[in-house]
Length: 317
Image 1 (cartoon, rainbow, N blue to C red):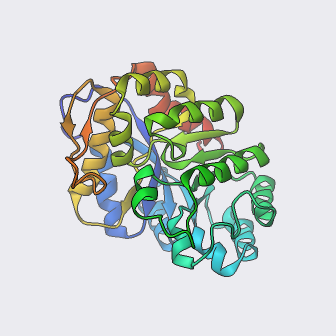
Image 2: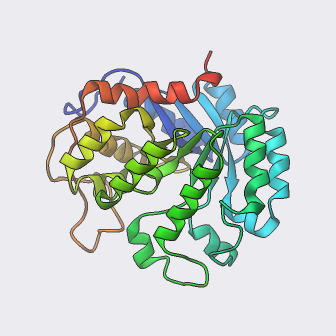
């Protein structure tokens, strides 16, 4: 492993449970950065069968493959075509599914807030198919509070964050037999939302969250590192480390900045450390700073490796 920032204290294998594959060159660079940061395996959300085949051929044994489902596709094409994709998913060599269904997908499709909600009866056949095929599901449904204040203001397409979280909880409630990894801390890393997320953990045993979005988690959890640390310690068996790095750019700093930010947040007790890349949500209001949680090694073991290996145990030798 290449030389790391000396403030990082964890030196055992890590599994990144949330990465995206788009281009071959981008994936090569991502893997190089992963190796530097001690990431031995990863979940790769494949945006094409070509990138899945390249990753499997070039890096055998490194990836679990998630088939990508566009959240906007269901608004334009309906649910039935997705059922065909689920039916062929395992035969194509995928292990799980991931849907990007953030509110922006409604805007792109000019779909109203009430159209084809994830917890609607119309979506039941999709989730039933996942359950019948025993396919774990990674879901991105809501976004940062800052987006609702700045980007999601057109009421023709967007509802409130509370309504979107209610929709997400409705999915967890209706499908207890599906293994869920809810992306981006289930859209609730904001300190004032941790109590609600705790209620979800206490109520629904079928889902974990991932830590993807280095800027979002760093920005929000750093606002009260004591409360955030206590939360991580209590629910450390329900979290998967994930960077959300998208393998498409030749810019090494893009990948390294996100790995470094998350690991500084989790492993150190630093205070007021500038985020190592630009946070567009705070660029005009002073920037984002990391206040480390200094998590115990037992918690890091869970988040970095054990939880994901348990969740995806069927896909490891």
